[in-house]
Length: 415
Image 1 (spheres, rainbow, N blue to C red):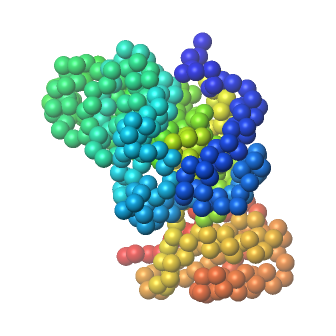
Image 2 (image 1 turned 135 degrees about the horizontal axis):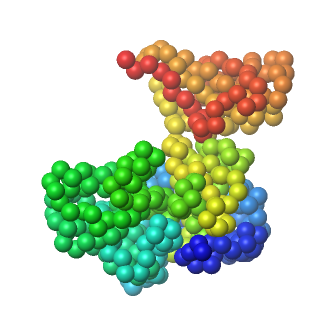
Image 3 (image 1 turned 60 degrees about the horizontal axis):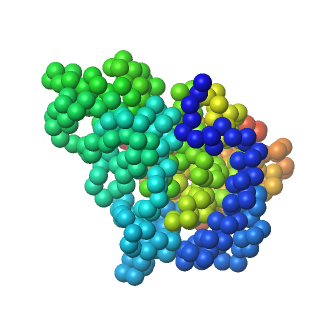
């Protein structure tokens, strides 16, 4: 029988969706009341009317650079930029700093980052000794995993990063059977153990994050006796999705509403199309509504073969911020979307920048329903209007452009 961390993982999808839609207007109202920044972002929004994904999709997206800008502007009075609903004290046991710096609060609730579900799916169980090799320095990665491990009933060795020989000595003497950390550092540890004769044979399972885990590396770990799974989490949101024994994409965590939108916009894409992951968290301590992660992925059809019924994503597929400098001017995905929105005939658009340095050539490739006379010329005028640059237009049949989430493709030669 398949084991789950809790019964939420196998609940009826219709029931889950109904519960999420019931919780959504309450969370929007809470964000407006408890988070000054979200109150500004959601000014004029009637929270009671946000009861569907369609209504949610009409709200603005807040992206990480905006969060950073707000924090920098108010750092003297509020280092969280008005996004946190917590105050210092027992309700905020820790505060972290991610590159930027961006400051994140930690709430006092059990398994605040919700990582236990991912650890459980990776085979972690009560009584395991976890060698936690995420950094314990400023950023929350190590604490995200530690909190989830404690929620399961594991014991944690706070190894952190670096000091490979000392870590291997601790492994040989403490005999941990589980690992959390990046896949690259796990490989370093196992290769060093092989080179020096250190005993790391107690490791049998791992949950990794922070980096991609290609199939070739997973197979390498399996050849060394370690069953490795991957997770997707951020410092702002905690766990977003996790891998199961089916090895078919990542299952979304239960505490989130996830959308995939066209990069540079807030417009949801069709199922299977690659776009930016946008998350609305139900966390009352840090109530982010439509937070753009900047990461690309796509929804997978159907449920996970393990019996988990929540939606799945393909995993991390790159970054959505494709802002590019062309002839000394910055062009960003939102501008490409603005051009496309002006023409109902345009189904999809992709700006390709070619040529050599100092000789940029810009072509907007667009999929269209038919090829109305003069459309290319009108789109060319819109390119100049929006970007202040001249560019060619190429009209394509529907389905011609790659499904990779790219809105701007930099194909220039940098030799």
